[in-house]
Length: 149
Length: 88
Image 1 (cartoon, helix red, strand yellow):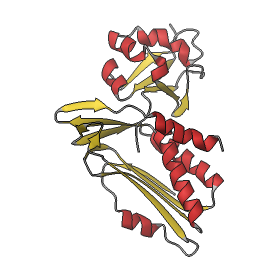
Image 2 (cartoon, rainbow over the protein chains, first blue to last red):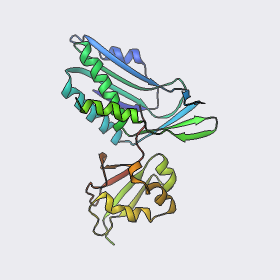
Image 3 (cartoon, rainbow over the protein chains, first blue to last red):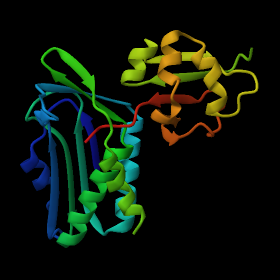
Image 4 (cartoon, rainbow over the protein chains, first blue to last red):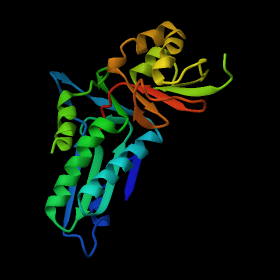
């Protein structure tokens, strides 16, 4: 497994190839990017802050929970921090398994829990204004869905 | 005053309100939970009082695990306060 928190960008193709293996039949990848359209304003950049030490521990815990639910062969999570411009990649969740269902579901599960549990905070830039992004109820709902099954 | 210390961290707008990312404070006498720390922390500055006034809007981690106002605290612990997370 690999969990990385870094400012540098990541190469989705290289991360996907790194998950290849003889038993792998499915690789699901999710990439989150900086959206410039937020509400009715234009976001030019955002700065991501995190809690070093806890971030990695939380993502590893989420991965452990995903591995307990699905037969996963490989997991890679890369989350960028620092100042990122509109359109840049923010996060990668990549999961490999023998079959597609486990890969799809585990990638979605990990993203849903990362959204509510991993200690990252975004501040959006609009011109020279910086504002902290507020958490979304829809993210809590997505998390709750997994615990109600 | 106890000589036993805890490390308190603040993130995002809570760091801006308190004016600090991290501070060592003495564990208040008799404090057993995170909730017991609140009067001492809120008394540190007007910014602390503002940041911590609505704990329903704030999350807590104890030694890098999610917790709450009822989570026990002890000397040497790392207590972090932060807004609901917005990564991903």
